[in-house]
Image (cartoon, rainbow, N blue to C red):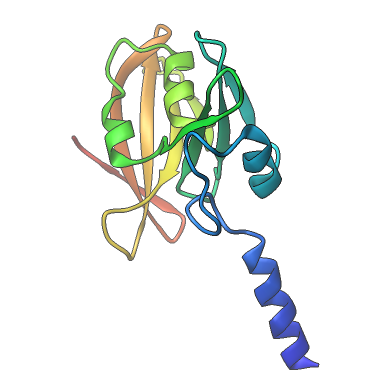
Length: 164
């Protein structure tokens, strides 16, 4: 009985594979139907100026990735990017709008409004640089645009802000 339960749990975990595991999707060859068949319905679909679309596969609030799958107008796969990679987070700059940030990083983990500073802070759980702690990437908005970004350590569900 115990062995059967372990086997059942292992099979269940296989179904949780992310876009970085399992059969590879091939840019130029794979189609939108291949992506959806493999990974299910996206969290959001963003229209692109050329008639294509970007499918958002966010793992928030507990995961550390947001896969953005870019499709050509005819449904062919153009590429897959992790919107929460360090390189993607570095592209968030003061003056950007909430929609621009959301399109680049995907759905946020949470939003908190700080009345005294009049800042709306969105955060994402991201991959830490080393193991042993969790990390959150924070985007501070004021007057409808990015004011700054910060990071917060998460140790046993407590937050420790880091200064940039």
